[in-house]
Length: 57
Image (cartoon, rainbow, N blue to C red):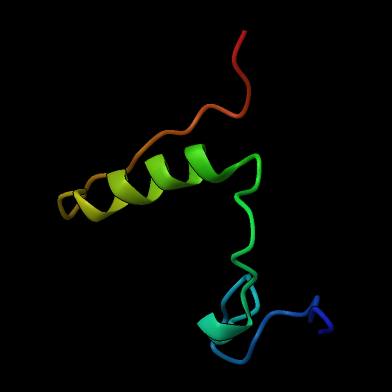
């Protein structure tokens, strides 16, 4: 599967693929942090944002 590096016509930053095309055989090293981010986004009230530190000491 080739990854499109250009923005889509909808202006999205990432390529959209069917869920069936996403590998599910193992959990990647970033699963925990991505799961936490998605959970926070689901519970976010309108007009609010989350701040995600790029590195921790």
